[in-house]
Every structure is written in C-alpha cells, then in structure tokens.
Length: 290
Image (cartoon, rainbow, N blue to C red):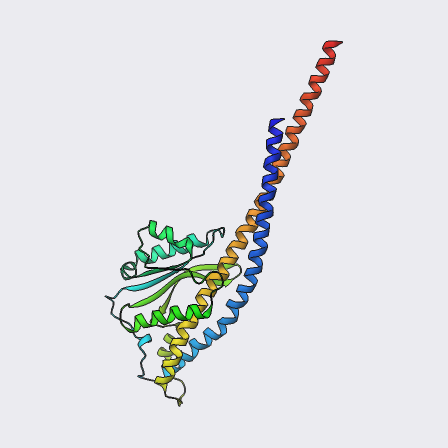
C-alpha cells in the first residue's frame, strides 16, 4: 500500500510540474512573437544604414571619421556580454559564456580591457573563470528600450573617440530564424561591415554630389549606424532567449508527460500486485478455516 501511495504522490507532483512548464511555454511563445516582430522590423533600417554609410564612405574619397579609424593595438578593448536575467532557457547562457571565454583567451586586449555584462546569468560564470566585471547593466530586461541602448552607444563612442579603448565588441546570441540561433562576437567599434569593405574594394561606381557635404553626412550617419547595430544586437539576443526558453519548456513538458505515463504504469502494476496479494490472503484464510 505504501508503494502505491508514494507513486500516486509522484504522479501528482509530475502533473503539477507539467502544468507549470506548459504555462511557461505558452508565455515564452507569446513573448517570442512580439520580440521576433521587433527584431525583424528593425533589420531593414539597420541594413539600409549599412549600405548608405558604405556608399557614402566609398564615394567621399579621403573623408575620414573618428568612428571608422582603427586605434592603436596597444589599447584595451571593451567587451559587452549579453546574457539573460532568468534561467530555464536551455543552453542559451552557457553557449554565450563559452563564446566569451574563447574570445578572451584568444584576445589579450579584450581580457585586460573593461568587461561589461547584461543580465544576471553571466556574472557568476565569468567571475568564476577569473574575468573581472567592470559594469553590470540591469536596466535593459527582456524589453530593451532604444533610449537605454542609445545612451550606452553614446558612452562607447565617446570612449572610443577619446582613444581610451581600441574597439568595442559584443558577445551575444544572433537570431537567424526560429530554428537557428548562434553565439557570435560582433565588432561595433570601429564601425565596419562587409558593405564597407566591398565598397572600398570596388570604389565608387557613380559620381555623387553631397548636400550637406560628405563629412557632415558621415558625422550624422555613422553614429546613427552604430546605435542601430547595437539595438539590433539587443533585439536579436532577446528573441533568441525566448526561442530557447520556448524549446526548453516544450521539452520539459513532453518529458513530464512521458514520466507521468511511466509512473501511471508503475502504479497500475503496484495496485494489481496489491490486489492479487489481498485475494491470495483471503483465499488462503478461507482454505485454512475450511
């Protein structure tokens, strides 16, 4: 009797867990839909700025901008690691931390430079591996505002322009599709892109007249492009986190269902054995009295 009661208690506990994980899966799915819309809707603007800055830099000739210039290699680099505030999202945070540690091991300028972390889940693993955290950002959450990202980008551009850091790189999860996300190290400063490199290689294909002049246009477009890139990185990280949590909670719900079925089978067998034992005792008692 005791065994069947124990199994019945476990069945009840598994059902409660299954209800919780199913609810969390539904919440993650809802948040994923909203975050995906935000991430995909901002990509055309970011890509458009990339192309515009590339064409302008190529056509402008010798015009330079401080955010496009490479600083001295002896200067430290600033690294921003974007993790989540909450767990239960599978290997999401572990993959980001592993990528960040590999980046530090292969880049001494990044290891000796300031390291900033977004999210609570990245603090302990990085400190455990000997990484000194200079700043922990808590203002972003799972709905980063452009105003907060804009303020962060302004500070990074100011540090870079003053020559205090040689580069700004962000370690985060990049969102490609609902079925594919990958941790990547993205260079934010000095501002560069494949479009810029291709434009420099091919040279200007058409003559341009600038109003206002090219230097003033670059002065406005390059900071805007840096901010757009950083905001896109945050959006990709958030939508990737919701995907990871949705997948993890679905797997937990399915596993709870399988465990519930297994425990129910065990309960039925234990109950059947108990009934058989009781019938045997009754028959044996009746035979002894007869």
